[in-house]
Image (tube, rainbow, N blue to C red):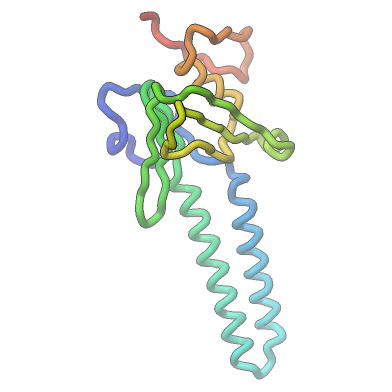
Length: 177
């Protein structure tokens, strides 16, 4: 995980820090595995053809590089929410930080597909007052009910009705003003 001191202001308090759900790796891993298997098949049936053998090796190496790159992107990306901002830190070679002040967020929606409900992930759609922000849709967030509740407490503290004590709801509360 990233060193938060690089990105947080001294007056901020961390509320949420997570990376995307492992399910975000399903598409790139399936492509990588398919390319790897194709490379094995090409190598197995290349016979005396050097061009086919080279193609098979290129497919194998390309698949391994693709898998390593996909995992690196997943591992190095983080979704961070403080009491003042929402940050999305990403990038393998070039680090990027998308920032949206919480004061600019006018609406927060989360969506859960069928697979998202089965595997435990969802997507956040963040809207601001008619402005194009650094990000507006964040896919594959784990525990979206809890994240939605935590962020809603920050955005709309006067409107949040606390649910009865349940293990799937967070215990985070805003301090009294």
